[in-house]
Amino acid sequence: MKFLNLALLLGLLAAASPAAAQLLQPKSEAFTRADSLRGGNGPLRTCYDINYYHLDVKLDPARRFINGSNLFRFTATQDFDRLQFDLFDNLQVDKVQYQGRDVPFVREANAVFITFPKTIAKGRRDEFTVYYSGNPTVAKKAPWDGGMVFTTDAAGKPWVATACQGTGASIWWPTKDQQADEVDSMLISISVPQGLKDVSNGRLRKATKLKDGYTRFDWAVTNPINNYDVALNVGDYQHFSDQYQGEKGPLTLDYWVLPENLVKARTQFAANVKPMLKSMEHWFGPYPWYRDGYKLVDAPHLGMEHQSAVAYGNKYQNGYLGKDRSNTGWGLKWDFIIIHESGHEWFGNNITSKDIADMWVHESFTTYSEALFVESQFGKQAGQEYIHGQRRNISNDGPIIGPYGVNKEGSADMYDKGSAMLNMLRTVVNNDEKWRQILRGLSSTFYHQTVTGQQIIDYLNRESGRDFTRVFDQYLRHRNIPTLEIRFEDGKTLARWIADVDKFDLPVRVRLKGGDYRFVQPTTKFAEVKELAGATRENLEIDTLNYYIGVLVE
Image (cartoon, rainbow, N blue to C red; front, top):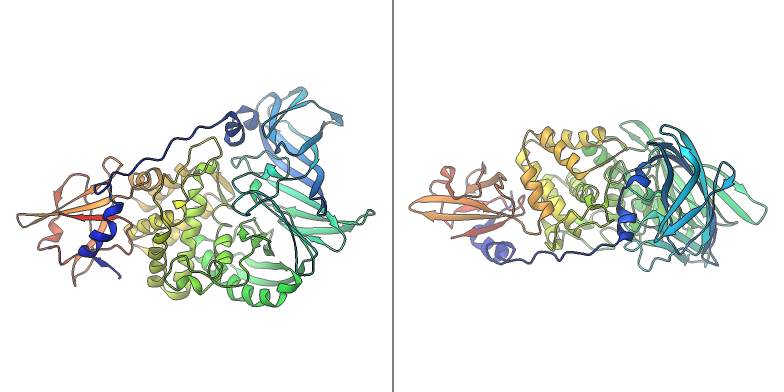
């Protein structure tokens, strides 16, 4: 087990300690009504449960123009005569039809409110259709900003894709743009100029040549799907396939790449996809979308976890665009985008946070899945070193949980700090098979569900048999990491936690040099650690490979 001596830790970690420096709290943000309309889940959204969409869109790449419709099929959860859906205001709502007639609507910011001619009774299944058109927002730096990407391939043919996580799916199609209510199934129909293909989520039902020189591709999604995962990928795609014998039987693997990438794709995908699936299924349970299959799709941006149609843009190289985010060497032995974005099939797609403020549920577990993949390929020590190396990316700039109801996520530390936090929980559980079953249980307990972060915390507390609530509070709700403070007085070793959370109580592994690690559980008040009798500044060692904490010695 790798460790650092306390004398070295003092210089490295003191700056991270709230006892060593007063860290400023993040500035409060002012949110608008538009933010609440986008991120909230008020009565005009909760009044209906979305069951099915048929998104039918025609794309004109030359004009960067789209037009089409979306059918909303829903069940009323209460009596209502007015509801909200969402579409960015640079796109035009041409009309809204209900029972064959146009119905009135008004727009505010990126929200659209329609009024029905009569009350729709609770429990009624009903539907309406939105017709729309316009030039969608063009992403400047996808996937970090939302919109559509318009470019060309090596032969000069159009290459178009969507990426809208965070910004919202309503940046390119009308939808109930809220993660709390996933549609149960949908049909995605994309019409493109002949000679091009569209690749979207689910399975290709048919391709139909139209009279106007276009071809319509109909993709059926038979599982629940969140809005931002719904994808359009248009290009001169070439297709090849494979099959994986997984926990639930044969899983189809379909790959859609540009002609110039076909040879590279065969090699890169073969080296990464099946090992990834074996690792993910071992740790998290069966791939969640056997009915819809698994796809990788060439994308003109770095990548995105589009459900059953993962967007790939890592240029057919290992690492993260050829770099190792952990700086340990382990990250250069596999393709980061294939592993990370596919990990989201379990966390983000199978289990989806109701509010973007809880995006740590997506990103912390998926970043942790990278380390578990490293472990599955190269051993546990390698996985632990990878997690430890990723700390170089942590900024401790603010809480990981964002403000609720305004479509605002928290600190990007949800990736690497969140992964380090989960690894600490595994260390405390101190039973790797039990920990694996806890992780697999997440996928089965919350299968195809939307959740709150608190539900995940409650589950981990219950299944581990430990109350980690204060640990989650410290790492998710505060920017500071806790500091273990050690004093040597009158032949005794005293310890306490310095933390933002009252009564913080994380068990930590310590040892005397040359000995075995043992758990001690300091409180936020100084107390003697009798297990460390005989400890000195020179021989006391803390398990800092597995614990992301500060350490102070007096």
